[in-house]
Amino acid sequence: MPAGAEEPDRRRGLLREHRRLVLQPLVVLAVVAAFATWVAVTDVGGTASTLLTTGSVLSLAGRHLELTAAAALAVVLVGVPLGILLTRPALRRLAGPVVLVANFGQAAPAIGLVVLLAIWLGAGFWTAVVALVAYGVLPVLAGTITGLSGVDQRLVEAGRGMGMSAGAVLRRVELPLAVPVMLAGIRTALVLVAGTATLAVFINGGGLGVLIDTGIRLDDTLLQASGALLVALLALLVDWVGRVVEEVARPRGL
Image 1 (spheres, rainbow, N blue to C red):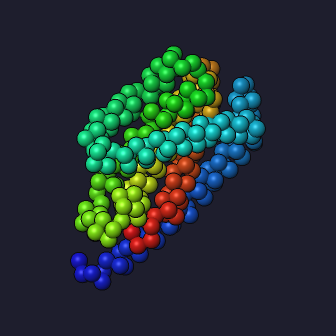
Image 2: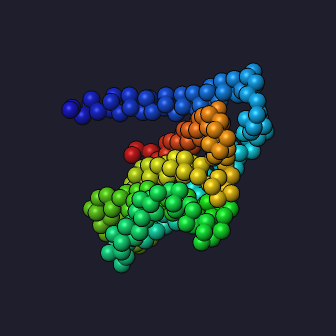
Image 3: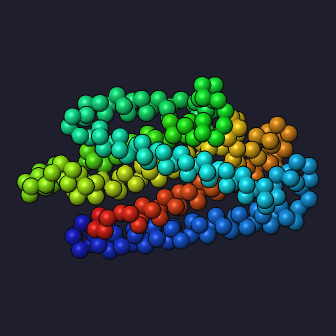
């Protein structure tokens, strides 16, 4: 492809991405508004009439967001520094075993991991957060390692040749170039954590999983469908936030 043809293609790709950034939250808000309107004008009755009130749904969604935010912050604080350390020459040989351990957390059935940690640590909010961190750290860790390992070593050597310290090369050369891959891993982890947080209900962690769990116990299809819909919408909203952060934090020119 001629060099001049690449720029229009890149601009079209950016335009499509920006359209998605605008449309995604609007679609989520439209579906939420339609759902709230339907619940308001329908006589749902029973337990659903209590759990599907505006106050109850906002409370459950707030708890779900607290779980997601706490776990996502911990995942980034653990995964990014650990990924950086594992790409340094002194610790590079440990990258394989550490990623293998992180794989165990994600390969294990999520509900089994949640229950085992509850038996060990006791049920509650923070146990759910620990389980979500174990389940969601792999994309961040792998994205950090992949992003830094993919940096052209000639650029690293050029930085060193200019007299930069190892820390300066990391900050000014490696991390800026690795940011796109790292942000993609973080966004994947955000969506994964938001969806898996539904299981916190089984260890008294709360969240929107309460609707699904109650619906299963009472054989209430409306509660089950409502919980599933709201979790899906929340995950889409979290994905949108991740896309916005990815777009804003991406170094210009990359």
